[in-house]
Length: 352
Ligand code: ATP
Ligand code: MG
Image (tube, rainbow, N blue to C red; front, side):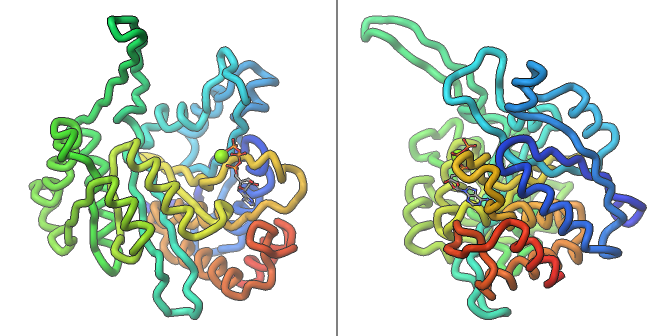
């Protein structure tokens, strides 16, 4: 299907805060790829806190409709969140994941090798299930003999675990090390985490996979020890797959291993759509100053292109970003440099 595309329609949703500064940098980097990808067409769309304050809706129906009917993929910036709960407002990114069934959150975390070709000490991907677990948000508060009692439902299904498992095996089998670690806590939560673990383990044995994951080695880690080992010996991990809550925690912990949030990309992926999104938030403390690091967004664009099968374009973006980082001369303040967003973008474009 990728070969048949004449143009690549990309929904662009900078949303709030520094999203407005870094997403345009990513679209310009994509434009610079020329014939490595089908001709990109950018479709500007709105969502977020500012949209909510203006219109009363955080995620306009039109935005979802256009993404569904016209776009091949999208780039999302970041949303500001009000400090207090505001009636009627809920995060558009959570809603978008639901509307477009983006069931996987994929976050590669990689430190930059000192020399090209050398191995990076940290080079892993966290694959987080994005639709269930404790985040189904079914919480109830009652009062009993012990005073108030709060309960939450944790949902794990075979379907969701199977499809996230499949995505993780697919990613692992495309990497040099072909190693997958399943994160769970089934020694304590034998029913829920047991189902997750068993279902993921069964993926390579499914008839439809046709033996294509046979060369992926499988390991398991209890989530607590996984975090410990992530900090002690991150090099043991290649691809990690986890239910929603553990995945949330692990992916932030992994991000801390390589420094600035301004470097870390992600995609939200489903069977029919993929959306690139830098991991950082709206960064109100530096908003409007022109110094936000655009590299997380450019890497998110690369990840999105790779997911769609445009490896050459993705490789070029990643190589350019790595070169700028290794060079170390043009960096934004979060990386102890004194360059602007625009100057870092120019450095990337020059490498491209
Ligand atoms: P939000 O509620 O939108 O997540 P936040 O206050 O938590 O906002 P984050 O965006 O999560 O802010 O960022 C946390 C810190 O990291 C901030 O100090 C921010 O300036 C910094 N930071 C995040 N992204 C970048 C970036 N792309 N470039 C430079 N600094 C960044
Ligand atoms: Mg934040």
